[in-house]
Amino acid sequence: MKNKRILAALLAACALSLTACGGEAVQNAETSAATKETENSTEETEAEETVFSLEKIVTDEALEMSRLNEGNMTRLAKLAKKLEAGEEVTVAYLGGSITQGSSAGDNLCYARLTTNWFEQTYPDATINYVRAGIGATGSYIGVHRADTDVLAYNPDIVFIDFSVNDTVENTERNKDSYDSLLRKIWSWESAPAIVCIGMTMEDGTSFQDYHCEIARKYDVPYISYKNVILDVIDKGIIEWKDISDDDIHPNVEGHSVLSALLTGYLEYAFANGDPDGAESDFSAESADVFKNATLLRPSNTEPEMAGFTLDENNFGNMYGYWTVRSGSGDFGGAYLKFEVEAQNIGVLFGKLVGRGAKFEVKIDGETVKTVDGNFPGGWGNYVECIEVARFDQVGKHTVEIVPVNGDGAVINITAVAVS
Image (cartoon, rainbow, N blue to C red; front, side, top):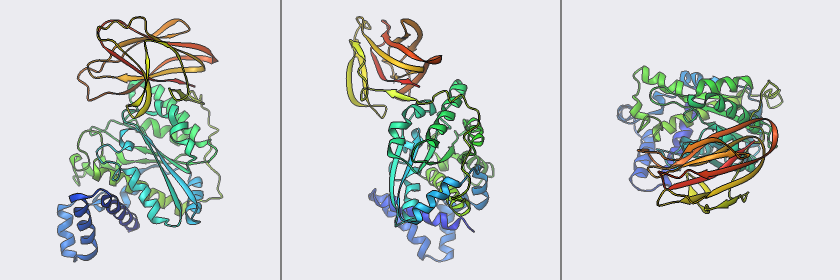
């Protein structure tokens, strides 16, 4: 079967990653790999009955099923030529907590495993690895941070994972964000290929259908982990607990499945794409709502402020934020004030378990949103986003963050989003 080479490479990649981790896990991985190479067929059959096996899931049928949109493969074929010529290539991953490596870690997440595949399949090439995953973030934050977190590295290929973080509570905003994100990446000077990823929660919740509709509009590849996993669960081949330790995040086995689907598609595209063919057509009508999206952060802007202080530490996997604290709930006239030139404006702020305070967002002196930074009973602190204004055209505006006195002790402002 044609997927055997993919699985063999991925198993080797897993073994390489585990070697870097040390301890009992390394010994188990090495034993498993050695078993596949040296034990007889009877022993292999016994191992398949007791050890999670990619072969049970990543069949040729599954690889075909995963290609929800096969997409235009011209840029992927050009990437293959660079790899075969031993050139330097940058492989980037943009997404939420799954791309960050949740439930698998740095060495066994799908991004690292997929990069291992590039390195092992094309040993003469130099592979640069960019993993820009931030938990609890969707494509709205993604499109605003893409320039600094991914495109600044001039990637040759970008994998995008936001299908379980984009939700129907903000359907139109998330569709606009994803559309602008694809257009932003595609038009970057390094002309990167794009591969979109569709994940799922245990109950099937996913933004996959909306994302794939946009990918199809531009004929961008879309690979569905969701379709494959729900299919093998429906057939009784595995249970959800085999590939996840909660209701969202793939565990080590789940990440290995995702990587195998991606590398399976890459092998297919590299073999079938035409490097001299026509590229995807991005001339389709689009409002491109978040064109030129960027974040105003402590690293690139200095707002007028009173009461707030700058903290340069990590909060929510983003470095630097403005914060104000009040033990009594009285913030004493504190404020942040930004002068911006934009058509669309949003705010990134901290959702804080049990201690977040409310604040008003004022545009040109008028209160447009009151935001609650509290996350009572939540799973942890994280960076949330809210869109606060859309105008008919680009213009100069004043954005003010003003704490609301009362319950709550802390306000963290990570960035103002402008486009």
